[in-house]
Length: 181
Image (tube, rainbow, N blue to C red):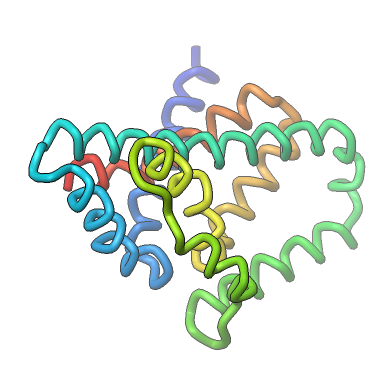
């Protein structure tokens, strides 16, 4: 029972963390652009806009959930590596490097050809879902430290179901503002 409460509390913290990640410099400016994408296709119909936003959030959540499952599977395979101080030092260095980037010390960006391709969203339901799937890549430089911490946790647990749940919850937290707005 106490373990179940701990999981629920942990998921709540991850959900709130997902909400907070919308305030990072890489995600916050994308909110009006994404909302404009939904509203331009909805032609004033709020139900259509909500459907597109829901598909976007579902795509976002699924992309993170896949990351969680892959991470948990890797944890099963490489769990013993996380016992070595050298591996933990490398992971800590990556988290610090991503955090320094988030603080503006330098920019970490995907290659421009990837950004150009991701910027060409298809119309309709498939476009909204696809946008959700790839939006995590665009936000990666700013949300990296938070996600890296979750990756380390899920890899240690080596439980694919938990990995799915943790990262799906993160995606829903990140996507909730799109549903509300």
